[in-house]
Length: 263
Image 1 (cartoon, rainbow, N blue to C red):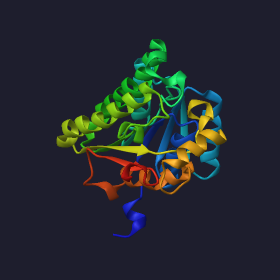
Image 2 (spheres, rainbow, N blue to C red):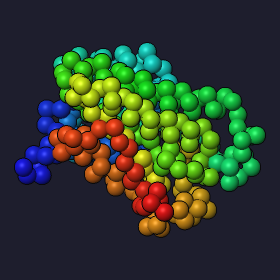
Image 3 (cartoon, rainbow, N blue to C red):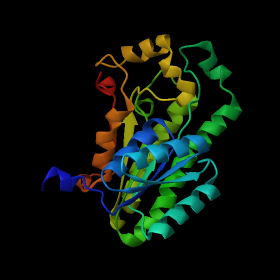
Image 4 (cartoon, rainbow, N blue to C red):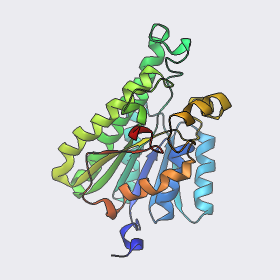
């Protein structure tokens, strides 16, 4: 089979959470560029409009839904609309997430200074929001007896990372096991569940903290390739996991980290 057929998403319907910018937008772009009709979900209404315009200008199909991933009712309603409008749902990317602030490398991130309210909000978005996204997608994929669900974790969910907050590390580790658990349950329905664990990428999470030269230098030090990735470098892996090329892959979380987890 030629590569263009292995990675062809023509006729597929997808949604991506946290799609107004950063990794979410990059993944939505590659799905649309390869034929999928993509729904973009995010809390940022202006960002969504710009993202949809960008995808449309490149020849893709995109629609938008303003959704706080911490609100399961709004999330489920949006997914139901997407599935009903297109009469199917093939691909779901649970990408929405938030920073927990700095890690224990600085005083503000040490455990005695972790705020309970911030901990709970990160839990609601990064872990519960991902679970609700997987559950919402699975409801529509099970009757079709096929589908791809991709959850975005982090290398902070695979290893100790002193530069990210406790809640972020804990929730991203939880996502890794959500992928395993859901993959096992949904395998009998031919719904494949996989995870992506990015290393340092230049995004706006945490207010774009990674663009601070000192912070960037610290992250670069843990990467054997000695640089921070561009969001476009995630597109190949996202396309692989969403496409027919990954038909025998489920239950795994794949690092994309410049070698950080191999050290």
